[in-house]
Amino acid sequence: MPDGTIEQKKGRKFDQVLAGARQVFLSDGFDGASVDDIARAAGVSKATLYSYFPDKRFLFMQMAKTECQRQAETTLEAVDIAAPIETVLRDIASQMVNFITSEFGQRIFRICVGESDRFPELGREFYESGPKMVRDRMVDVFHLAIERGELQIDDVTLAADQFHELCKADLFPRMVFSMASEFTEAEKMRVVDGAVDVFMARYGV
Image: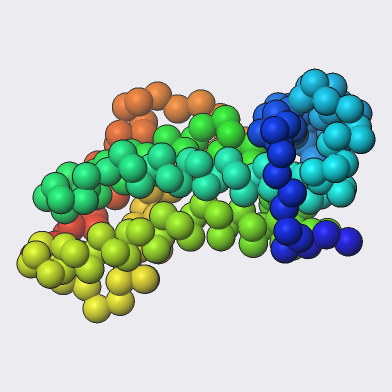
């Protein structure tokens, strides 16, 4: 069966199929989504869908990977790494918190976790295509800030992971345990400010 390493066929209706898949998967979940519904939402035939994606699992993996990469790239492009590190951290934290609490972020996380026992590659693809991209970029940012004398960090990879966890404080547990699914700007900014303050208190020069 496909494992996500298959050479992906592209064509003029590729993005159209992914858009339909995004709509149906996020609405119905992995098990609830049918190929018929995805083809209908995409406005293509099942034959066209299968010409791009040999099965539903591979389609989901490519949809999740594409969306996570887009979200990660958007996060990174929105940050001016030449700014003072505290400003950079605040911008990154805001992007992280907004993604974690977004409808897409919540749904894709639940699907990947829910299917991780049967399809562990789903979780790996999700991590590699999104969180890891941001983590690697943060490591680069930290190295630059260290060179500028703004941060003092021995283990930059650990520091990147710590910052990511700080950005999940309070909101993420409430979301995972279905205590809340929507958060106010004040709630999100409280976490952003706290993450930056704690990180700078530990690593700031």
